[in-house]
Length: 483
Image (cartoon, rainbow, N blue to C red; front, side, top):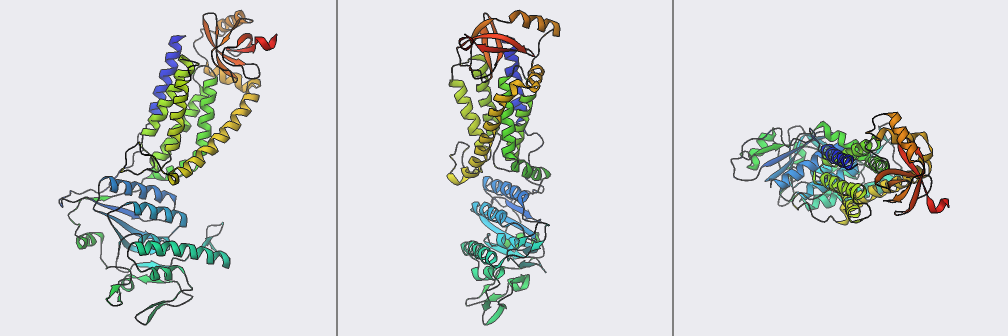
């Protein structure tokens, strides 16, 4: 019996550690790294080369965190996009604002709509020849994927909100908010030095030459600080041509991470229910494997998204081991069980918290960082509780329960020997070592068995009797209730 318990504990521990090691999923930080002979920090280049959609969030988050960690001298956005979702744009702007060093946008062809919004979130904007920026009015996407007609009230409301946000972003980084406003709000007219640059009813879009034209007194560029043929020419102008260059390249696994994170609550429910069933059935079988795989994929999603590192998966495995110690080795002590449950819950929560890479791993997240993870974990806990409650009342009476128990049980030399042993133990009385809801542990003389209640919960320390076997699991009744 002791050997079997040690085998189960070792199996759980090894599987836990292996499952939470995302071998092959580590994002490569650089596809082009040259030697740094400048004596300054490196230059990080983030490609914004696709629609502004969720996978891009992962790439930008990873790049910004690497730039912060490695004390980069400059963060450059290599911009070429038709735009995208407003919510993702807001998140990208928030991520870029985390970097406290020099920030630059190089409009390498086009920066339409959300691309223009993100551009003004950097301190400097430069453009390639024959490139354009602007046309940032919000549109409503139809169910078929194309642009749809937006009701007037909705258009006014959305335009007002987005315009205010982008004006504030432009002012923060030294850009003319009226220029940006004219890209968003077609009711605005843009005048400079008596010249109408954008009439009412029109949305402002600027070519590279128009964007770098000088206006005012003293004269200042309208939006762009210059035109350069290539990124290399721009680096020379910025005085960064000798700096170590790090190009953040997108990885296919970051797109996989998008789907994983969208299914986080479902993965947590599968994991919690799977582990619960494993603890309530003997041996190690299908429920435990499903639970471990679900949790592994959950932590992998946070890792790929750049939200968390391996530390939370390791902490989860440690909590799981403490819970196993409580249930299999020291039932009734509560200390190991409560500590393990606390570590498991905390690691699940922190696995989706976007942490500042400049702070230690034990940093305390603020309310805004915890909001979405708490919502996700709450949904998962409520969903798991409902499913577990249904399983407690229904599963023991179904053939599926016998199948799960039989699949988990091992170590018998033959079916006949198992049957003879079970028959000899019918009517044997003992005492529960743990609460049975419905599964648990009980002692009969010198034997400790996995048991399951025939109905309701049986408290720890209750006198019990074996009334029959389900597979190789003893089904018990409370002796007091039977009398």
